[in-house]
Image 1 (cartoon, rainbow, N blue to C red):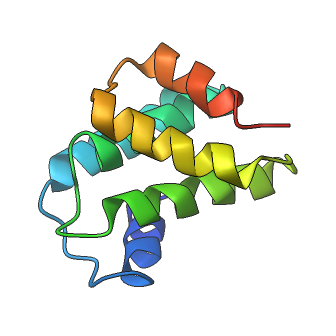
Image 2: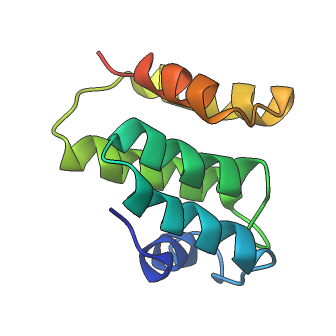
Length: 110
């Protein structure tokens, strides 16, 4: 599980870590403790980053870093091209349904 500070630190690798929607990120982080399903946990954070745009900039890059952290933590192999496509799809289609996000993220795993 990630903390708010973990996500901010990841964003700082790409930009300045300045939050513009702190409540959304805090909600997403709090949802992690309500489920043991890692895909659901990750989906809340992905939605906050890509749909709610919690940071001033670099939300997509931060999303990729968060997803990779989860994949590494669960020792999962993934297709990097499909990961890029996933982030673009979620952003373009404004996908905010947690279950659908989980299914899409799962499709990136090999």
